[in-house]
Image 1 (spheres, rainbow, N blue to C red):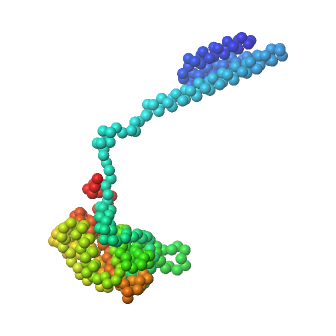
Image 2: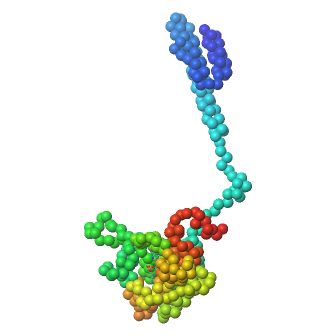
Image 3: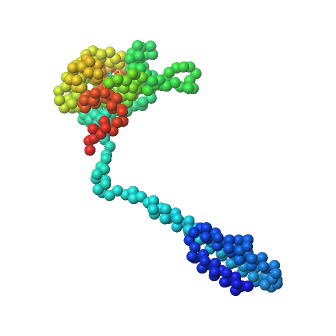
Length: 354
Ligand code: FA5
């Protein structure tokens, strides 16, 4: 019987070696281990054996049974691994790029024109001794209005349509926080964080709930400037504005200065540039008037200095609030501000600098 077992096992191993399909292996398994399989019959035949034979044959038959089971399992597992490897090999993609493909597909991003001009202006003002400041987009009424001499019921609050945040936990319907409507908020932060004399600029996004057109956006960029010291005059203000424009345009551009009203400056001015889209003939950007409002400015109002902790009897200064998007439009002859935020690659790629 033991010999028969050994013979069966040898037959099984040489049969298994020849098989390469799962179904064939499972068939072989049932030939040997199934209910009526060869090993099962030997085990069943044990009941007719003597106790002595049972003692010998029982463990041997079980050992062969376990070996067969193990061999079948590992053969099935090997089949599965071979199938996965074959699939991986056939579906493999070469993700590396050759130098020639890289060279023909040399696609770098460009710098947004607003960023380009902002960086240029920062360099110009840095060279004139100005610091660069930043401030939060979400502001409180104090920084956006009150400290700038625009109290709660002042009509100037309506000049800039404001996006307000409501505090869901507030007991009253008071509107406290807002998206800053201008970068003048940073005047206040700048004054309270330094002692005069000082000069700084502060570029950034501003937000207004406005109807959009060729020269108006709801989210746009301003660049605030402030200089505070002793005996600062309108002549100083005009000098810095002229230096800025001649550096940016690299040529004489026609500007006009007219009185402008802003509660935080006195006197206040509007510096307009002759529209470079239509050369002053009239177009949708300049609203057919030939001039574009670009650079409001003025001498800082004493109340604003006071709100910033500065004694207006000792110090004075100027401030300006450049419309950065409009300056970009004039510099690159862009005839609609909405191109600047359109995310159209055909537009942005024209400003590649590398
Ligand atoms: C102000 O925002 C003042 N804070 C500027 C200022 C600062 C005045 C310091 C005096 C002293 P104004 O609302 O005019 O002012 O906006 C300033 C500039 O931002 C405008 O001249 C214009 O160039 C630009 N601007 C205003 N509204 C928009 C808009 N909706 N879309 C694009 N640019 C705009």
